[in-house]
Image 1: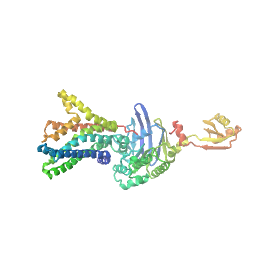
Image 2: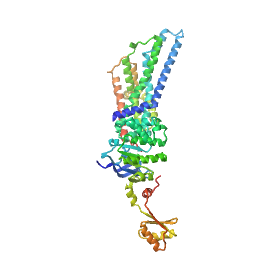
Image 3: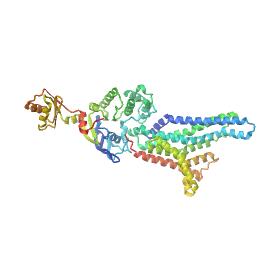
Image 4: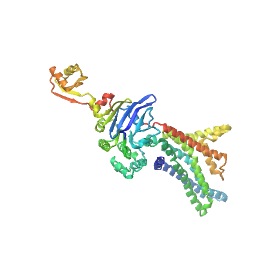
Length: 302
Length: 279
């Protein structure tokens, strides 16, 4: 069995003359939780739209479970569950009726499974309420329930915790991790970097329609510059001395500290001591996903 | 998959309050009109100067079988309005609700989905014709019992009624198809209903009135406009004593209505197959 459940190859989408997505190629491995990140307008939703055969690519291809997905041939999507942006619901039907309606699309989904899903997403007490009267968080839960109903092999989620309260977000994160541990592949687009960092194995970062980084999170963060933080009596003077050192890419004073990138902590200590400054405290830190993201996209996630 | 999608569309159609409100309104309107007519007849009967033949003629109109014909005519007229509103809202609103995205994104083939959606309107449209017929039957039956002491089933040509019901449903096909096409094209319920009503109730009549006096091919074009053709056909069907299935007018109307239905459905399908459904 091919280990790649989702593969896109040089996907391209233009809206008139506006480039929305340019040469997006990514691979999602079976059983992984894949994070898809990017600032607003970077092309995430457009990419997901092409994967779900809602948008026609101008170039490139989408392959799901080894089969090509096109506007006219989207059968592989039967193995996919998705929640894209605002959930799609029939507002004049109850939560239970919405799920029962969707269950007709798949064989062997019993009313018991519908009740099970309502419990999973925490809507069992409002199952008989019309979906149009739900709050945005409740609609999001119902949308997630619809995506999970047929126990898909691949779950594609675009901002699944939108509108949810912190408890709901926490439950959703736990649910996604549980599903991934049980073998489901999850493709998650989210603004919440700490959430992605907590649950994703791999990420792709999109900026202005193109992928700027892709791979295992630990490996990507490992490539980032370690920051050495030293507490010194004269941070400004220390920063000026360190900037002149070969290999130093950045040195700046920050309160009582000097922050240095480009050389290891031992080299920082040797340099400072040889210039008559003995640091009181030296620590090292690796960048987190937010720093990596900001460094690559140059923009605020919000 | 296709039959599954039809089943799902039926589930949505019959759960929609718009349909039931429409059916209740036309039933109420028809029932009230029967009540008013009977009240008028009761008043006529108290007036000595009114000839008994006139009263008898009026009784014939409000009792069976004429009451059934009246109801079917009403069903055909009110059906046009109800079809435009129902087909327009049920199709166009799927776009802002993104329920069409949901089904496509879960592997429903686009052509099967659009075909299922279109064909699923058949049962509600049948309801729009049958409900007035049933109301007319009940009101006419009650009046018949009141005036004549009982109902004589041999006076009702059930075969003709059946054919007229089918014919009435068929005559609504161009309205449904064009409204469906506009809904897929514009993705807006307001635009769809507005354009459909404006076209069928105003624009097409104006165009026909301009074309008919010109004669020749222009007159023929006027005759073959979709709403004009449907209306002419159903009027002929309801008015004629015997059906002439071999007449040119009947044949061309049957073919013409089918062509309009199929053509506008195919236009809708072509548009939908290529439509960007967005995020």
